[in-house]
Length: 289
Length: 281
Image (cartoon, rainbow over all chains, first blue to last red; front, side, top):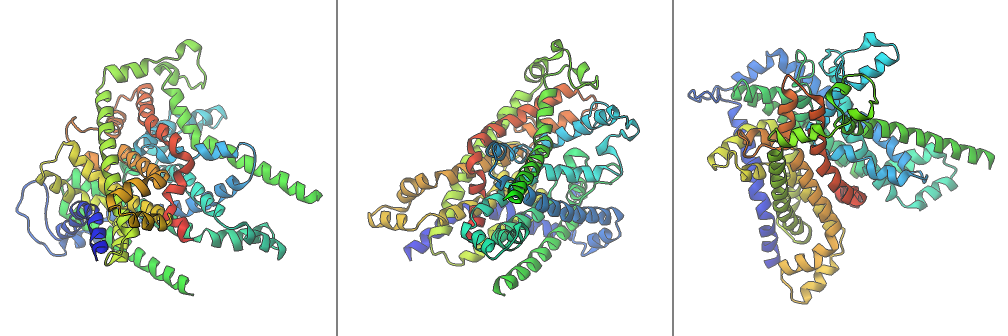
């Protein structure tokens, strides 16, 4: 009994901070979504579902929603695939692999603001290294500001996500692979399994938990990510990279249209909740079968 | 035997190819910006990769450190980062210890609850958080930024540390308990020494998240008092007359602390970050 109470006290500081700075703000945000609140000092009134009606009629919302979903699905899928490749390569016992493993995660630890600056520089039409290279090989007609190009800005932002996260996937998958008992591989080999079969029937099931954790976390992080787009293109050119987080931020902090912004933020929350619940269902069903 | 060694050679060649491409793609851009920070502005614009020796300079760093407010921003980032690290470590360590070792009512719901806050869209929370910060009188104050950043760190940090504590044999607690120690003594003298690799990674995680945070700082900081390095980068690159040499120098200075810390923990980084995920598998 004393033990039980002590446990609660130990968790209490974390719970208080989360309550004040996460749970209460969430509830307040959900409430604001049903008001005409803005920071310009008008009388705050409940306006029912008006914000949501406005949202459904807003083409930028639909554009940003599509971008957010495409970004999340494509980026998480590619990170998963490239992460697996990287992990498989790092698992080879070859000279120099240790040094490679020790530096490869550097891109994950630096500030996203620095990442955005590095890639803005690389994408520049005049001083950017991509365009310098293109001119050098006689493809000068392709030169463009890659982050200011309607067609290429969005893929470029996806690439920046990969740049930051693929090494993390790789190293995490590698850690999980190394925890698989060697005997499983030996048994598979005795059964005549080739390299692909060993990967398919021993490695992949062996790192399943890690895959689940990495994919779940990154779906949430990518869908909610604000700074990649905001710090590299701000959502432009002409909304071509606008995602829901940057749209909500812009509506809140430059147009002060907070009620409307919150209704879109609420929609994001609902979408992620649906994802989470469906996902947990599937996961539990797989666990029991 | 012949085919076997043939496969082995092919695997090695393919592996090194992936290693080479990865180095160019993942490490190259960082080296490129570092290289740029030592070039004079005119040679950045020459379109040639190498310049005459006299066109390399420390001028970009001198300008940033003497003319701009960057040193102030750097110190702010450091102050905020260290405070966040100390506070979040304290809160997460005791919280994770409580969840790992005590029979708390509704424990699973608590764990899922803490983890699911990762699902909350931060942009939706920003205005209410701003209002809370204003109500508490913490606008433009270090404590406001610190408490705001805690929510970015705590859920993952608690999950990570709980996974790490779960991996330590409970017998070491039990033995200490029989010896008549209290919770604080057990945590400080028995658990933490064994868990120090995990704690080091948790500390690294908080510092790096705090150092790289833009969202919270942009909301809580409206003057220079708590403006950080990430705000400085954004302001300087957003200005119309971009001087790339100086921008590169700022970027390098923003990266260096994180890379330095990374070099200390890199060996156990992933083991610590993913303790919860591996243990379950």
